[in-house]
Image 1 (cartoon, protein in one colour):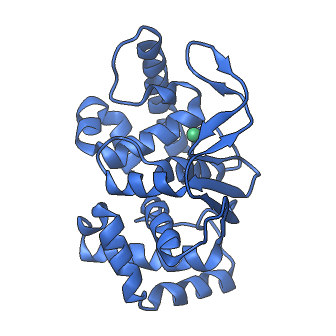
Image 2 (cartoon, helix red, strand yellow; image 1 turned 45 degrees about the horizontal axis):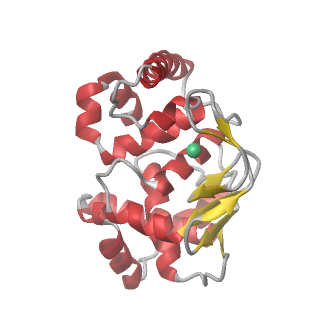
Length: 247
Ligand SMILES: [Zn+2]
């Protein structure tokens, strides 16, 4: 990944700058997972949060005013996905639109078993390829952050979609380094995706949310949530999948 020099210098300066004390306090208070990171990881995360908040445009909707708490709580979770890797900070994403609570979107959606439901969908979040924006419900953002082991996390889910877009296609594959990496990834992911589809079709309970059986893109978002929310169980039940995500 080639980053332009100005951008990478500006980012290095932002990361080197000490984060406002209040921001650390927000992460400590709203993100229990923050307290479980090592000192180094906490500092890396705070550095990423500063770049993220400086570069992304936040916009309140439905009467919500954007505060530092909202920015830092969203950024803190989104940047968990950037730790320990070279990153271009979700280059496809410009704006984050935040509603106070779930909102109604006019679109059809898959409700399982090949059945599609149309119109008036209640949504907590959304993002799309070439959309440049990501929409979140603030109450669900807060709830997801506060419950780090319930298997669900809205921010991780939507930003996993953004990672998926980095290699220009929404196909459940984030940007990887080598051809070998892509081959290994594809081998493990197709087997696991098929297994989840079969289990979901035959009603067998699964550790992974059956919503992941929708398509490879949702599968990637769902396994990203599981990696952060149920790492031990994922390692036990899906060790190849766990290893790929860890890489
Ligand atoms: Zn999704």
